[in-house]
Length: 289
Image (cartoon, rainbow, N blue to C red; front, side, top):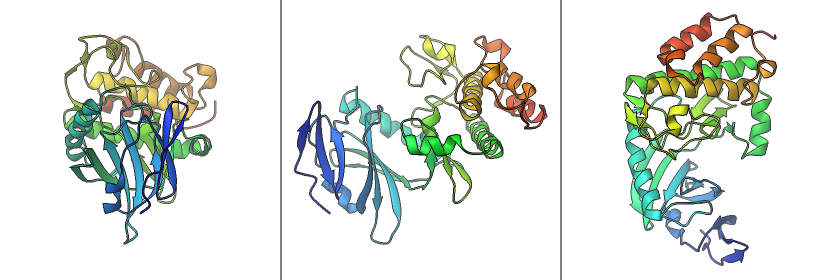
């Protein structure tokens, strides 16, 4: 493994290399401990969670996705100790919610002056705009595939609700499609909480997915909140987050189902995720408007 130094300062960031792969930090940090897990082939350094993530390949050819907290990540807005505490707390959710559509947790440990969580690597495209090449491929998926992804995501969240969890900070960056294996993969549930959960101002989440109650201090966050998130997910997948009737490509009946799910008033939404998916399936089948 190559030494991550030398380090170069560029504008507001330091640029380091590891196994020939460059990445940004707010300050130099020694990642040589990653050699224990193999050769780094990919770095994700634009996360705003306080983590920096790596793809690493071991000598036996197995690949891992490594999420690390404790380093001065380029977009980190919190103290390193807070990022470590958040990632440490996330491990229980991955263990409790193990599912065919959730990225597989392998291990977690204190290492390198921080905390690392190790998952199986998945070759997949991501729905988020942050990854332009993936995003363009995702936007080109046929409606039938998008419908399958939506049903997989809803199915996972029914499972999460059954386990007593509410979705917090689920967004398009959490959604991946494994094209080779035709499998939906959910890759980020770090901030999921046991339900009911009392929210606070500044709670994690993309503005396109966050319900009104998640923007208020002391509001109840529960399965009805996750219903809103699932409705926002449908608009993300099928209409690129445009909620206007003109942008919706499927039947009007399906539009009315997900429009109901993203109602600002909780009482107007479907009251369970099961109710949402039943109404979705009962609506007019996939077809152009």
